[in-house]
Length: 338
Image: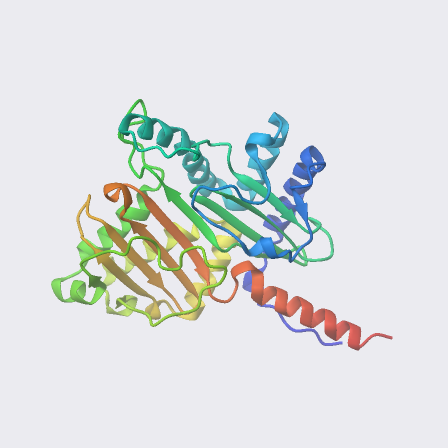
């Protein structure tokens, strides 16, 4: 029997095992809630959104203390220590945002700001022989995982946002949940020569949001901006650092795999594009586009104090490539049965 060979770079057995254990623990705590568990491949699995609204799943709000701990442990083992700090900070910003809106009079009736309104769903049987996955979705955090054969892990779409990007009031004034996403990109822009900036700066006006929105799938567009190959040593280092800001939203195991894949696809083909003003306080947007991935960042709303950022994979969002191979192997095994 010959099976379709999977790329070794996708393997993350330690992360897959930790996620399965944490998902089982969450099921043990609140599995009696019918909103938590669904069949893998359920259509709602591919629905995600970073804006505030009620979505599928069980919110932290409706969990016991043990359930909330189990849910947040699942987040931690899935994203790693670095990104877990960002995720929990973003969630806590809901309380800060509520305070800001109360002071500014900008709150909207029927749209409560609550750090416990993040919704968890598990698809399939964690650790079983069939593919499974899980999702947490809420305002400015959307994490979507697919696990195949208990060692292949897809991690996209991955979305982090922050409102406010910089806290303006109270004891947390000055706090930033996503500082590197803005600062590293602006440092890269500032490092460009006038001629290089003419290539990178695509429009003096930024779009009002990330262009890919919360679409289930994204397709590669025409890459725009300046190639990494056109940059000198320190500029290249800055560009690589920016990509790592997003790769590091994953566990060390998956981040290492992702970086090997990015290098294998060719760093020199990756492009950086900026739209909007270059200075702090200006509405701005940037995109980093490689052969198989897209990073988008937008900070235009609320007087450029409201971040949206996303990592998408044209090939492996929702584990499409791994699932295709898995089902092809299963069909081949069936066809070559005794």
